[in-house]
Length: 187
Image (cartoon, rainbow, N blue to C red; front, side, top):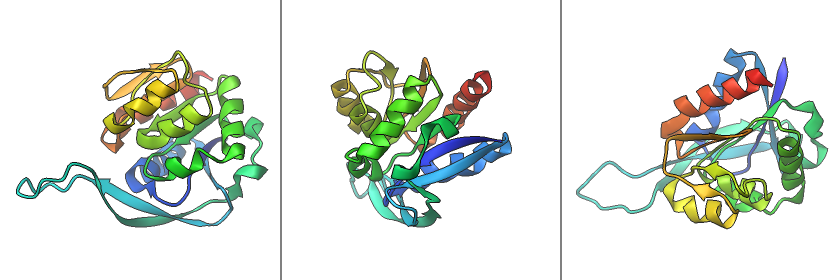
C-alpha cells in the first residue's frame, strides 16, 4: 500500500480533510497524517451561512471533528510517500512558517510526486516556492497568495499542471480527488 502524506494543524477545514482521508484508502492508499507535533488536532467547519437576510461576506468558522497526527513534520522522510494532500482551513496560514513542512513539500514536489491542494493550502505551496510558473486554482480570497507565489491563478473547479492538482474549496472535492488519484496511478 502506498502512503500519502496529509500535513495539517489546528483549524484544518473538516471537509477539505476528511473527504480525502477516507476516500484515498478506498483506492489502496494509506493516509499518514502529520503535524508540527504528533498529537490530536482540531478541525473547523467553514461556510458562508445560507441565510440571505443576514449578509455575511466571509466564511463563518465553527468547531469540527478531531484528527490524530501520527508523526511530526520533523520525523517525516519524503521518500516514504507516493504523494501529498494539503488541506485548507486556517491551518495553512500558520503551517506555512514551519521549515520542516516546507522541506517536505519541496522534496515531494521536486521528486515529481503528485500533490493535491485545496483552498488555503495554496499558502503552503507558495511558501515552499513550488508553484512558480504553474497554473493553479484556489479559493478566490487566496488568489493573491497564488500570484505572489509566481503562479497563474484561474477560477476553475480543479486545475492540473504537471504533478500539482489544485481545487478551490471542498465543493470541488470530487473532481480534485478524481484527478489526484489519476496522477497517483500514473506514478
